[in-house]
Length: 342
Image (tube, rainbow, N blue to C red; front, side):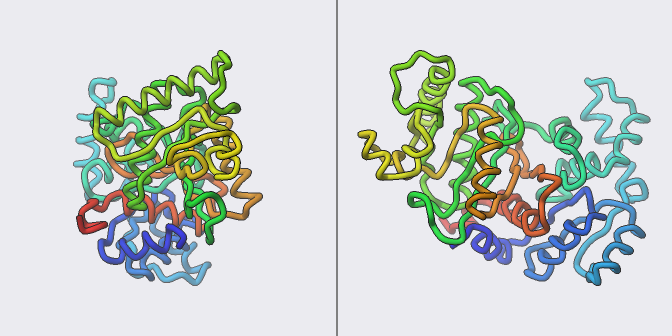
């Protein structure tokens, strides 16, 4: 069963508030309407109230069940501005600068998330990635066990096509151009943690490269081998229930026959559900190719390493993509014991 219907059911039992900084965008409004219709919580739409209402009217879309907030005219503007100035004081932010900065919906949304007024954030529909990411990186602290901020994309198939997985978790596809072995180890564990939270399945993490268990001393291969060992050591120290193997080619990670042909054994070979790429270029290219050629669903970028759930979506996202990213972020905000009753 695809992942989004499963997450939808969980959110219907545990509704969440998702803030959308680009509340005027038609795709955001369509995704928010789905959120309300399916009783998954409350969409918080940021932007000019008249513009949002005009767009909704043009789409013949009912805004009932949604909350519209114009940041500059909100009753929470002054307290949030004071809080922002406190958070950024060491960076030289003055109260005046904080007030001006908070007028930006991306910043206002991040402050709503930071202060508990929202459970998750989905932004980036109309902004380049650096602009959408900046407020989150400046305002939301890292997770207590994280050293690296990264992102993941979930590739979801309507029917299982590859190995044993309905869904594949690709990382990092949006933040770190040239991650070090230590950063890759952090990315692997953070991605595996989210995969486990969303699916309740043991993560099988493949550290990918262009060779499988090679004796080559090429720097890229050395990096992935080191990342594999670091990730294993960190997983053992934290007593995490997951499997990690590398360096592996994509076919050895996903195709049981290819894994057997290459004389690989173990629970990851041929059955990986978490794929960690050596750099941003390979990860981004891979997920877009799979998405287009396999006509799969792609949901992301879901940010990892932050202490609160957020997604930085592509400007090319559809309403369906945005709804899926919101469902993922929303379920991240649900306590694991509530999700699975254990």
